[in-house]
Length: 210
Image 1 (spheres, rainbow, N blue to C red):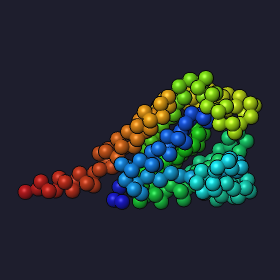
Image 2 (spheres, rainbow, N blue to C red):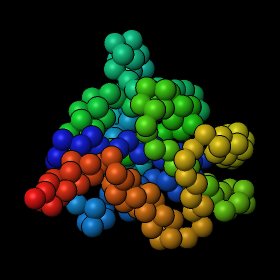
Image 3 (cartoon, helix red, strand yellow):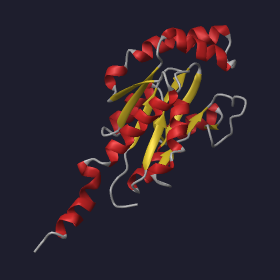
Image 4 (tube, one colour):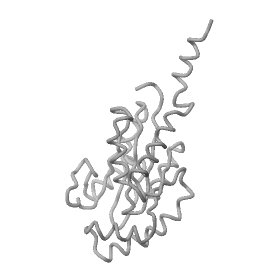
């Protein structure tokens, strides 16, 4: 990587709106360049769901271990969501940004606000479901939440969606492929920014010197 600092891309959405699927498609996109994009794996105190692996979806830790890391200022952000603790490790993010790697964060509105206070230049993207009805259908189809949990997540979604004004971009995930293209476009546009390319642009300019 060059000496240019990478971008921190925050992706938030209500539970079930599809941000995880969008992030996965972005990470699998070979056009972006191998090793140029990193997904920051969060820490959580909740139990793994079926098919989830420690270190892939989350680092699953005890409440005691989580609190110890938080007290040592080891998190860029941390929050309690649906009765569980979640946090983004500084070690997952800061060294990679410094090395010119773009980093993706899958975090909620509380966490996004904390990260933006520490890294104001972070790019924030909010993923909307097409409607409340679609979101409810998706949550029920996961078959991982009780009816009470679904109702709680829908109530939380209403509050979370109202925060979209704090974000730079909004993607409506009605069609997964179209939504994935929009998320990729945000990242590609950031990579084409003047500041990101300043080092190379100045080198090109020098070739025109007499």
